[in-house]
Structures are given as C-alpha cells and as structure tokens.
Image: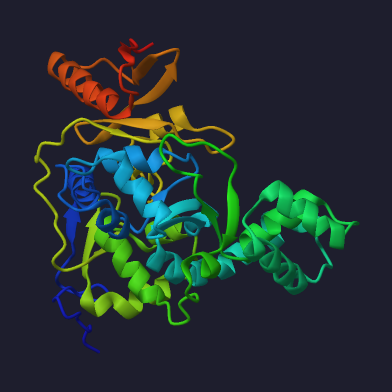
Length: 386
C-alpha cells in the first residue's frame, strides 16, 4: 500500500522523503520571532496578548514587563486601560495557571480547559480531597450567586460558602470554585501602581457574554503553533495542560509542515510560519517571572539548557525573571524599589563578553526607565557569576 502524503508533500508515516531536521538554534530563532523578541513589534498590547494566546500572570505586574520587552513604545496605561475597559481579563486557563487573556479568548479558552481543571481538583488537589462526597454542582451554583452579587476575595468567598457548609473547609470551598467556575480577577488587581487583594466574579457576569460553546481545540492547537512552533505533540500538551492531543494533530496533519529536531522528535508547524536563519542576531531581553517563553514546551532546550533549568528549579514552581543573551536564558534579574531608589539586580549564569555586558547594561537602563517611579534614583547591580 503506498504511503499517503500530506498536502505539503511531506510523507505521513515514513516514506522516501525524510523530514528536515531543525537545529536547536533554528528552533530558538523561530520561537523568538513568534514571541516578538527578535525586534520590538508595532502591535498594540491587545493584539500582542491575543497573538501570544495570553500571558501568564501569577505576578500581577509581570505582563507589563512582558509587553514592554516585546512592543514598541508600550506604556503601562495601555494595559491598565484594557483591564479597566474589560478588554482583557485575568483568569485560570492553560496548565491551571492564572493568565492575562483577551475577553474573547477567556470565553473560548475556559471551556476547552475546564475538563482538565475539574480532573485536577478531583485527583491532584488537597482541596478536592477535603470535599469528597460533596454536591459540587450545588457549590458552583452557590458560589456563582455570591460573586455575581458583588466581587469577593477568596477569603470572603470561602467564609460565605462555609456558612452553608459549616462542616467543610472554607479555603477548600473557595479554591474548588476557582477551578470549577470561570472566575476572573477584577480591577484594581493588576492595575499598574495599584494594590489590593484579588477579588473575583464570573467571566460571564464581568464580560456580559456566555462562554463559547463552540470553542475548537483544533483552532487552539493552530494558534499555539503560530506563537510557539515548530513543536511536538508533547510540547502542545505541556503548554495547554490538555492530554490526547495527538488525535487532534493527526487530524490537522494534512495542513501542517513536519520536521524533526536533533533528537529525532517529530515537530509540526504552520506552512507559512516564520523560521528565521539560525544566525539571526537576537538582542538582549529581560523577560518577567513566569514568562510563557520558558514554560510552553516539554523540551525547553530551545531556550534554556538543562543545566540552567535545574539551576532555577524550585519546589514551589517559581520561575524568576529571565535574562536572554543571544536568545537563550543566560541569567536572572530582579527589580526592587524602596525609599526612592530602584535597583535592578542582574545575575548572569556565566561570564559575559565585553559586548554582552554593554548590551545587558544598556537594556537594563531602558528597563529601569520604564519601571522606576519618576524621580527615583536608579541603580544596576551586575552580580559576578559564582
């Protein structure tokens, strides 16, 4: 039986035409291009957030830094206005983590990941174990009624739910609702220069629209490839938290290009997606904590070596701000502001060349200009590698 070929001429399984091998550096440059990190983009903040399929946002102000490092002329008030105007929201989606996404994407993404979130509650959560035997549908109905009456903190929500279920743990009740219902965090949470506890209501109530009942996992995979490809099935699953996506990719295969990485793994990509020359220069970039560039592949060596990944690994899953040098995670950074002084501490993993050091310091100055309060004294500490 002859081997069936895809629409782009790459053999479906085996055949006489082997897939092109993409080097680690080629994959790095493709990822940087799609993540808007080879040059600052002219996209608006809303357009960039949608292109990136959201930005991880456990740290309230991380998306501001993520957009600054990717966009020309980005100003903090642009994102703050989007949040206040309900054009973007903070909601749990991919990997069960808090993301900043457009309102349209919130309504599309949450139904797709909901089964994964429910499974996480029932099989991998201490909170879920405290609620065994409980009527979860009744919990969701009660919780929705409470937060749609007025946005609540999780502490307030848990206390109110515990009045109805006094034999259940209040924290477990609130955290379960966080996974079972599409809760969004409302301003002033996430507004630059503001502070305050996270208060939540439902996405439907906040956005005035229902969840997307026709959300397509096929479309989600294609959008992932546009922002993170070329990638393997395992990569898409690592980014999304979804499983059994091999079936989806097989369905999409006729319209995709296929490659191999240097380890022989099959990679998929959109036919016309950019794959720059591996020698394309990559400028120094400062990425915020939890940036999806470093979290969205099963094999992360296209952006960070295994040695350096272990260096930053922590038991609680914290991911520090990343210093990119020549396109790779080459160090960490942290910004501290106190008593009228903004201090940027940069800790490279290894010794920088003279030119690299100059580029890091110049980009660090630009970061301080963006982040520091007007009139604050600014200081950069470049820590010598141990």
